[in-house]
Length: 199
Length: 199
DNA sequence: CTATTTATTGAACAACTGTTCAATTTATTG
DNA sequence: CAATAAATTGAACAGTTGTTCAATAAATAG
Image (cartoon, rainbow over all chains, first blue to last red; front, side, top):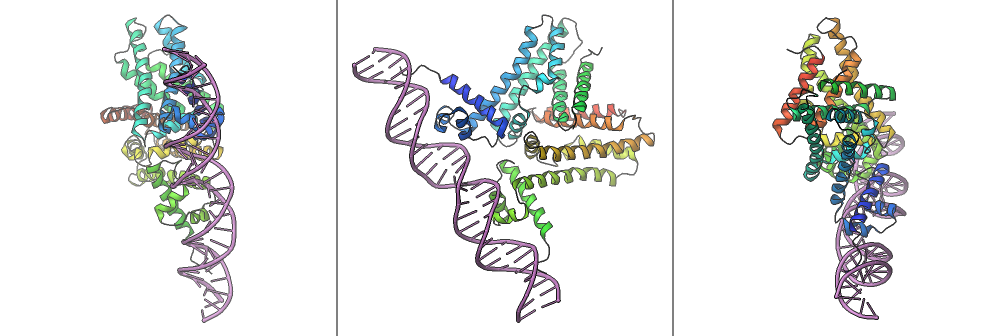
């Protein structure tokens, strides 16, 4: 029955091109035509796979989540003990690893869209929550083994993520790399303190 | 010699219309034509006052700073003692007063532009810094009167603003008003704790 | 080989983009 | 009133926007 189904591959290719173009041009000024040019295809082919531009943006936010989840996987795969996983994860989160995962400009543009389009808000919050829940479940594991004392894992996870959000918004307002590194270090310490892991 | 100089009034009017249109349509998709329509004037008149769209955006960021500075003025005018000023300011910052001052969507869109256009980064960081410096100087006053013990006012001001940035980014990812209010309350307490003002 | 289905093209659409510029209106000054 | 200078208009520019649609190319199934 017709061509082999390469739909999913193409869709992925388009989202990736969307992301790459958005890094250079900005999310809101990345047009379907520009994405098409990046891939050397016709704009109508993109519309064939994503009926509207909003569908395309939604797919990009999903793409973003996948990238962040990889950091969790990495911490899980390279460690056996829950506490080691947690420490490894905190180290990743408060470091360039995390910040370089997804382009800042694209990320904050997508976040800004949340205030105009309820569908985007839902999508974006869902991602944010999924990461918090995953973190919370790791905290619970650590509490069970007695590695940390955490009565309310959900609450604690929220606090860590609020520090994380603040950190990355804030450091981009600092002018020197040295100031940025110093602040990143300080907020990591604050997180470890909150978890009762200060050395 | 010619018409009376209403240049400044018109420029202000245009920026205000830009802001109002951006709230509804989004910052990046607010065109000169749309602003003109809001004011019932010709697009070319806007270009007459702001040669490029970038100039217009820069003016909008300045407009934003003015609004935030008003909260400081208010705290200064309604109090005499530095400590009262500080407490009043913290209360404003971690409340709807602060959040409602400038539209979130427009604010984060402007922030996102920072990563593509160095001129915007400079402008935006300058505003952010100006607020921190103002806050820092109030901390110094409080330290001088002995109301608080603050060895490094700049450092402390930075930490409070980092909490503030995190708070407002984070609460928009929470789904219920109750959760949002609770987090706002918690981060205000954390700030007061940092200042040694926990009751 | 043929029929079917999907992938892809290419042209077209009206609407909108940021800018430019000459012409006109308006108010103030001498 | 006449001269001047700024405020404002209105038309035009080439390029881009998101979408639509019929035509064509390509691959697979019977």
